[in-house]
Image (cartoon, rainbow, N blue to C red; front, side):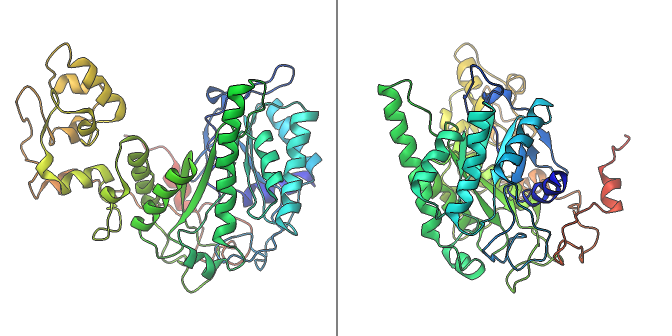
Length: 436
């Protein structure tokens, strides 16, 4: 019975991408488990996503009927609900057997948000108090739940997340009319406020309990609705600035529902678009780019054949080439092939000597891209200038490999309301190592 529940609820949880497991420092003295950022081991799912947690739903019996969700009320799938005691015991046993390093707990909305949050919080109380489990826990907050429940969640979990799901209120009204944007935003504001208050309390009383030490995250579904990458990145920028978001995750829509505006199995959302959004997100967080620089109203979507940094550099040939021995750190970050670490190494090393391309290579720069945008010791080594019309073709990554399908056929049982998901023979063959 428990194994069957795990099969159903573990499978139902795989569509949530926001389950990173780093950034916490919770450690216990007389229990077991440790949520230190270096203590979480990562593995890879069949679809390429990085996982390291027991990723499961409390229940998939939902009162909502969101068109894009496999667990919607109107979908004919097997239903199950863990009891808090079952899930706590399962997590503890999996940890002791070294299967997992922590727990990612989400849920469909059972009866109402408060009832669902109570179920999940009871699970966490049992783990923390009865089992004395100090490992990593990421809890998915249910929008609309009482603020007091949210506060307790932050004291028990290492990270909280509230999935915004769709990029605009218009799409939310169309595909999930029972959900309100304000109900999603309100807990994000509460988490930010509680965390700031907790930081102040910790300054006065070091014994004060930590509130969500690993911060909060969210997830945006990409491609279910017609919003452009420009709209998605504007939303991302707002979330980082307004709510101190730790991460925004992007999940390419998998056709699990039927609606006139939802993509069907015959026109899947390319995973490469999800990948480009993650690259653009990296530029926002670490490379000091603004969302308006990466995409704009004239170029609303990211180029699938070029990484966003290369695409930006090709649109601004007037800034290149830059001299690596004199350029400011901010400008070095804009050079394709130079990352945050290598830019810092360049700044440090050039204090002692004039750098050349070999030095850049030793510092971790990707010379095959950077060579078109830099000079070293007054010399431009590339045969093509930054403003050359053929440079785009040289830097283009293209799509040399076809996107693998997770489905046997377009009429898979999942699309028809079933729960099975298997790889086709061609996909299994593609996953085998290639002899060179």
